Amino acid sequence: MLLKDVSRKPLLWLAAALCMAFAGLAQAAGSPASVEHARIRWLPGDLPLAGYFDLTNTGPRPLTLTGASSTVFGDVMMHRTVHRGGETGMVPVHDIQVRPGQTLHFTPDGYHLMLMGRTRTLAKGDAVPIRLTFSGGRSMDVMFAVRGADMQ
Ligand SMILES: [Cu+2]
Image (tube, rainbow, N blue to C red):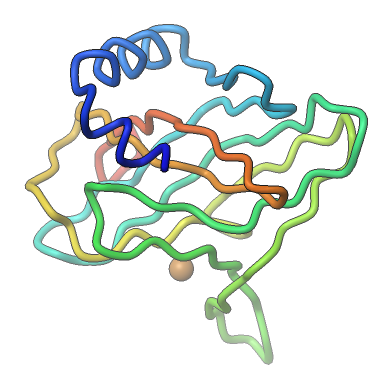
């Protein structure tokens, strides 16, 4: 499994992570997707955090995002913010389709990653690796920048 390979090669993983962080754009080899503006809104304590990013389908076929995971969080879910009867809430999402050429914006008022159970202390300025998983068994490792509660 790729996950085990990554943990056995910490230096390689670190190098790849740094490259992605500096490029500000993640494009996994052979993956028909690119991710930009990957960011996390920091909150104190162990409150659930929200992750946002822009996902572009650069391939010729529809792309389905099926989930995300991270060694920095015990649980990562995909959510969508919904408005019903004047109230705002969140619902779990299991599959998100992206058409060829389409860019999907994960935002506070739409799709977002819900990051729960921090495995280490996080601070503004940190970079957090999150693996996005797609149908067909493909995955992509993206570095998310931790921003302040004001998203600056
Ligand atoms: Cu949520």
